[in-house]
Length: 275
Image (cartoon, rainbow, N blue to C red):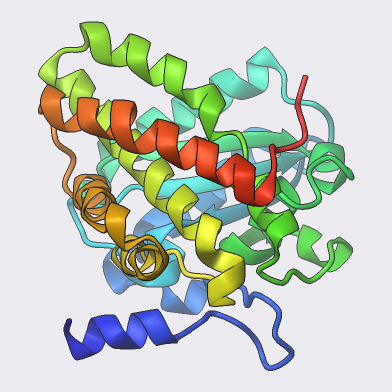
C-alpha cells in the first residue's frame, strides 16, 4: 500500500469536535474546471431566477479538487423554493446538455432538483440533508447547511443513507439483461459506485469517519470483511474505470450486492421507506 493511500485511509474527514467535515470548497476547484463552474453559476441564475431558486451546490470530484479533465463530470444540486416541475426538469436537462457540449473538460453534467422543504424535512434529515450539509459546496444563494444539524458517522446515518440497497438490485438485473456494451459501462459505473459507498458506510461507524475516496473506502471495508475484500476492490476498480463486461457486472450484482444488502440490514436496519 502506498504512503498516499495510507494517508487517505487515516484521514477520517472529521472536524475538531468529531463531526463530519464538509469535504468540498470552491477554493479547491482545479483551474481547468473554473470556467465550467463560472458558466454553471451564471446560467443557473439566469434560467431559474430568485423566485424559483433558493440555492445551488456543487458536489463530487470538482469541489474536492480531485477532478481530471476529460474524465470527470460536473455534479450540481439545486434547491428550489417549491417542488420541481416538469418545466424545471426540462430547464435542467437543457442546461446539462449545453454545459456538456461546450466544455470538453467534463464528460457530462448532472443536475439534481429538490425542493427546499424536502431537503430540510425530518424524513431527509439523515440522507439528503446530510448530503447537502457535508458533501455539497455552496455555489449560489443561502446555504441550507446553516439550518441542518452537524453529523457524526453513526449507525443512524449509515441506515438512512444506504439502507435501501436491496431495492436497487431488481432494477440492475433488468438493465443487465438487455444492455449493450455502452449501456453496461454506464450501468457498471453506477452499480460499482453504489456498492463501494454502501460497503464503506456499512463499516463507517466502526471506523469512525467519512471518506468519498472510492479506493480508500474499499480498503477500509476490507479491514472488517477480508473475505469480501477482492470483490469490493473489483467494484472500486469498475467505479473508477467502468467495464462493459457482462460477467464482471453479473458477479457484482448477483454475488456482492445481495450479500451486502442482507448484511447491511442485519447491522444497521432498513432505511425509512419513501413514497
